[in-house]
Image 1: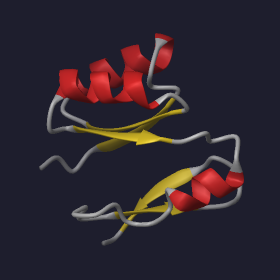
Image 2: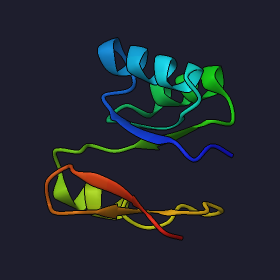
Image 3: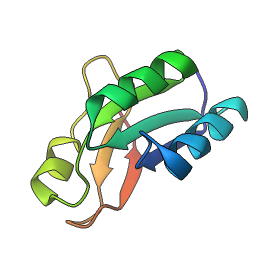
Image 4: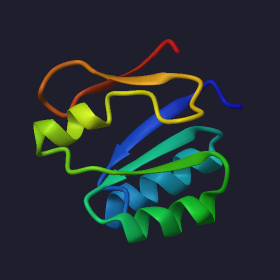
Length: 92
């Protein structure tokens, strides 16, 4: 398990996808956020165990709050620092 984690918004395409691929190659675990689940799941499949697809619209505070809880089986919890899409990895 990696200790370096990157949370990437807009990870389903374009610059977000390119950043996710590069960060994964550099040894980061990547949390892939975006509105459309399908491209996130495909990208997570490309990356492998170091990726987690988290379909989320970071423009909606309720969606961000839903993602602020620990995913089943995760060793750490995502904590939302405010109602804006700013995130931090907190202790499990």
